[in-house]
Length: 267
Image (cartoon, rainbow, N blue to C red):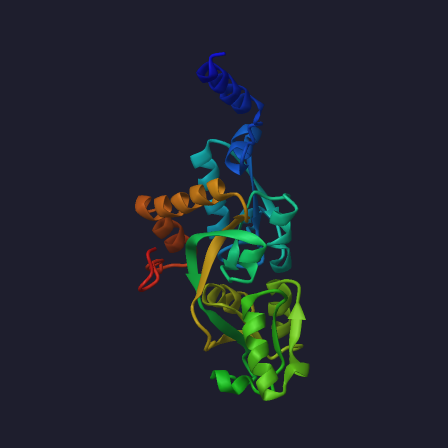
């Protein structure tokens, strides 16, 4: 018996017997559509325009990714609390939604390198007298449920003994409305949303910056799909290299786009 031929035949049969599994990148291309979860109550990053159509920085990023993949795009409006579940249940292929790349979340979903950077800032009722972060003590503070601003502020509220004054809402639009109507004194959002909201509501003015660290946000995808996450990383770098990152930031936020590289880190 020719053992060399037998071994070769066995190896070929084994190779044929192994099924080929498509990954998310293949799925999106084969399906011909990219499903993007986007938070649309986060102006100017994600919102609805005068025609009730999705618009903003994150919407344009979804369109750019679809163009790179040569597929159509579909915008799936999600709340802050839905950003991870929509990926876990495979209702969306990616989420562009100001999602902080926390280690706790990384146990559930996968993250790209940072594609946008924010810091937390308050909007306040113009008659509340709130000018500094310390002025939040004893005030009715509101934030969106499931967000980093909520988690970070509650640490201070616990220390101050004012947790009972905190108000959690399902969307930032509800937070802003609560402040405008006097139901809350302070609403915590991101620096990019402050000016549009202050312009929209005459009862609201810009408040102080929050003391916690800069918020690095990433594109979200399935945790185990390394090929897809690698593609998303490359997409983010190409957005910067091509000038699209600066172009979109200048259009929707204004000014110089924040540096995405973290000091002392590879990217």
